[in-house]
Image 1 (cartoon, rainbow, N blue to C red):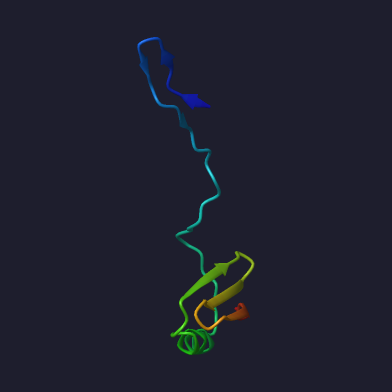
Image 2: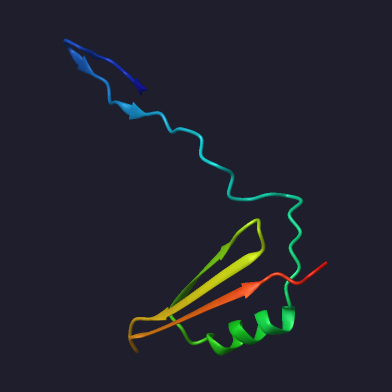
Length: 83
């Protein structure tokens, strides 16, 4: 849906109305992971240029680190601990 109108002597800009997307953050999400492994992964990749963390509600973590200067990409997959 567009908001705004165009009339003869004045033109108003059009703005696209954003549609709601699924929430990216949940307050009460508790997924147990081995913190020592997670710490080791972060420590091993501290010199990388950037990284992305993806977490699913099913309990999978995908970590991907890149260093464009060195041409290196590291990718890790973690599975949640049993409760």
